[in-house]
Length: 154
Image 1 (cartoon, rainbow, N blue to C red):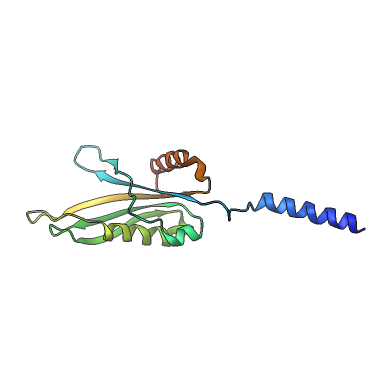
Image 2 (cartoon, one colour):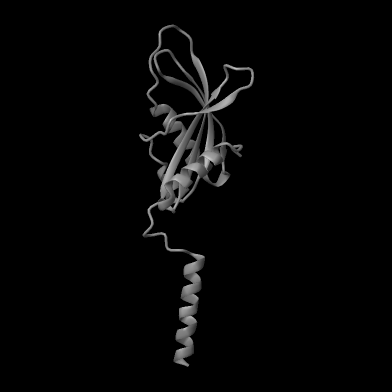
């Protein structure tokens, strides 16, 4: 009786470990891809920006092990101030609050250089937040995030 109870307990424990893998000893790898919409040509296109090593992955999104994207419209004054910040879209909806908050923070914290003249620049940017627990495959994770950033943000 005890042997069969022990066998059942061990079986349930091993099945549970497959269903809910232990991620406590794995460090997540996070990547943020940033793009700006180039509207200087007849056909607007997204232009990828260099990696943003100074930007931290959103804590709320990290705690919930989430990934997502946001598209942001805003204006930059000649003094380098951000005005009329608007989140055009974010996805997925379950992480929408965290993604929107993070995108706003990146735009506000960005060092926008002062310019001569009076012209306000209107920009549209896209931020993709990607997370994986397979830290050993960093290059694959970055490639996955780049691929994700080429799809629609919905």
